[in-house]
Image 1: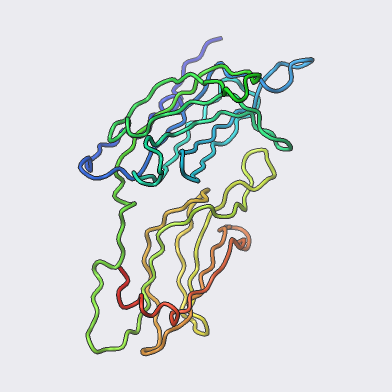
Image 2: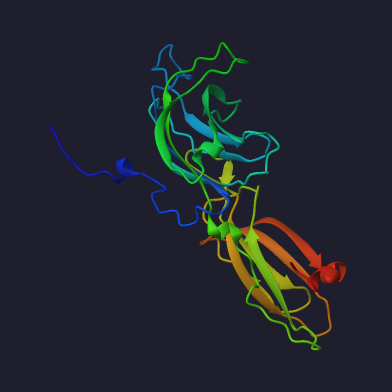
Length: 286
């Protein structure tokens, strides 16, 4: 029996939008992980078919940036169709050649992942340029006994994203000789946040839906951000205004939570900002 249909998964082709900011410095590395094929088998093989649970880890040399794909269960030809937007500018690494390393691993819940190969890219070659291709996974000379095979299909572009250059309060004005009565707060982004939600078949938390709440201590003045879905490195670019008594410098309490629609939010951390301690900065916020 034969049947033909349209599958949108097979048409996944990211980063086709036009780049209107080619004169600006690149500040975002866009990575599209499409699929793999002919990958090395790391699990089973005696009485069962040898296979793997492949996952890809992305790092940039000289930085602490780490991004991980989901893992695909029992397959040597996975399809991810996942996008990673990595905030990266020249100067963030001291190395002369900023390099993206993509390491393929066999995911394990209860032990270290098994190495399946890697591929590296000179990031500068993709400045304001989109490229999609298949790339051979390479062995690690430090682990010569590890079996490596197969390819990954990856899309790359290093471009300027104007959202990352967001500057708040540019349209705000002040009135001379009048005590301020509003505290302006800009929520820009987060990074390395705590995971609270499991994903896939794993019971281990791997992601969150972060939301931030602001409150001036000892008042009813409150604001809250939108929530961002399934990310530990959210970008909000949101502004808030909270009334404060003229002439007083309040304490601002900031709470980050994992948003849940059907239950109470899970705490992800809290801190307080005493405006008395930063009053010299408030006069010149930029």
